[in-house]
Image: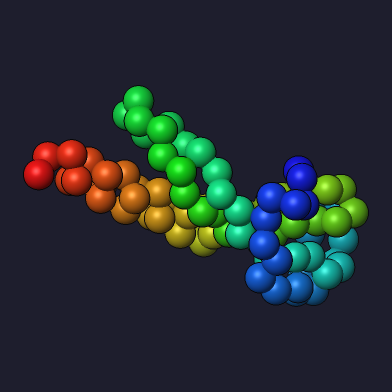
Length: 83
């Protein structure tokens, strides 16, 4: 993942499932593109970034929150088109 494409929100020491160690990981926010019912939706996701393996990961709660966010954006987009 290209580190230039995300914003570091915080640094937290926690267990990293990517490298299977406790270390400081970065809480990051980045824009991503999702496809919902054939419609491309740009939205922001929040995940953890492991500097040891240069990969992102998310907790179940993060995954749920990111899904809610993109769903809300899709609903706003859909409602905008029906007015």
